[in-house]
Image (cartoon, rainbow, N blue to C red; front, side, top):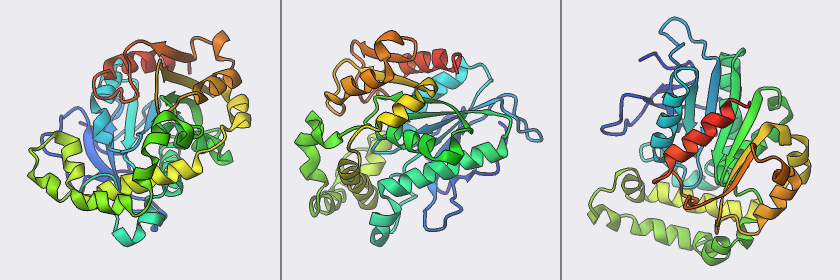
Length: 311
């Protein structure tokens, strides 16, 4: 397999039994206030040890919990479909991956939603600087979609990004959604600290792959809960101007019923003129849930492959 690009380094704590189709690695920030983030890399077949020139790079930002390994079936399927024409980098949220925990004293600063946005901005800059001729496409799931929009909104990144795929996007008033109303109390102090303390008892539970490793780490669990509280406070009115100005760079996938999106979907669809743009917006696909990466990765890979042909 081709070597890693210069903006990625070998993983600090490789995940056991990881497939050979991608490489376990980490992203180290130039801003030293940000801790290393776990990442995964699928090289383009056009990339060799001596020549690193993928024609397209997909930058994927996960939801919350922000574990890159949740999405390996989906991203591996998409990589295969693109038949060597695509390199993919998936970056976990800072502090969410065991082996990449942030010190508990720095949670508010290093694992906040603002920090995750800055991390994504750095990654897009690194990809664009390394591959200046490549087409850069962003894709984000849930709050990852919100982070992608903030990257697009940052003026210096608009020319770098050719397209943005927003998958089950939570980009407006999460607190007012059915799940936001139901679960927001879990994310308010001191509940996250109490819940993360209980993760020590999770070590008695048999291993349940990626999520099992996370719930065994009090600091990772707290980072995810703390970030969720930040999302509830920060993600408010939908950015109408951004949606209208850059609608030609956006492709969206909504569930038929999504309790993390709720009634906000209709406002987003209206702003995008989605009813007259069915190739850019998919909504109402039966049986596909917000947590698509568990059992519906192939369907989303098919859809993203179609969208890549439109970018």
